[in-house]
Image (cartoon, rainbow, N blue to C red; front, side, top):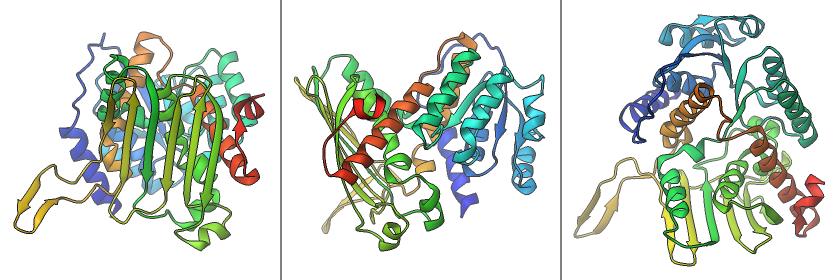
Length: 360
């Protein structure tokens, strides 16, 4: 099943790179990927499609997983320590388990290498702050993987807002619903629905609001699987974010959507609204005597966002080539985690939480 999904991702990347190609000075950024699991394989594939990027090495404690990437992309298998000391690696892409992220970011920043890290930096906000201090002290480049900002449709929506087509943003509605819950063993170590799942929506909300969130009000329940509740988490959640100027963003998440992977955005402004719809397996619609019929929604986040994953690697490489700050920084990772902490506190105490309670 995983192999089939990865083949789907390859097809989507090959035929859906509908973002205009950026002219580069053709400097080659030499990359090492840490972690050869499914997300590591997606990033390895993305690197292979980015001009100016070359995958030099893969590290994974499971030799068979590393061999899959090595054989597919012609890179060497090395240990993390070997990559740290490799003169032919300029930057690393961290795709290891969450509890290793902060340590690895610090390790490679101190080694003088640039870092792309899958979200989150850590599940503890104080640990994230400590990590970001090391990034600053070493004057390193850190990009955090919030791939939704790099989705072509979401980017077009953002461009429409910035062009003033809908006037001033007033309200945003974000919907994210998974086809089915992840395994319970994943739930237990994920950090919970707010830190693990909704954190992507928090990042998109900050990006689209373009203004700091002042208050967070959240509600959460266990409606899908009581075992998720027994593991200390929720599977259904709603949040209202409000900025100082009064802009509002509502977010709803569910771990179950029997009709597929549900990803929608609507932004309402003073002059109109703009929305991004779901992706179907095909874009055709059949009309006959029994009604109108569409193909099912895509049902796998790594297929739905395949182009976005490739685009974010491209953005990372471009930032390194241009010697500028990457588009999604460690600060973005910190702020999205802070919103998740505020949402959890709101649920636990049944009240609206001010962000200065979390950020100090």
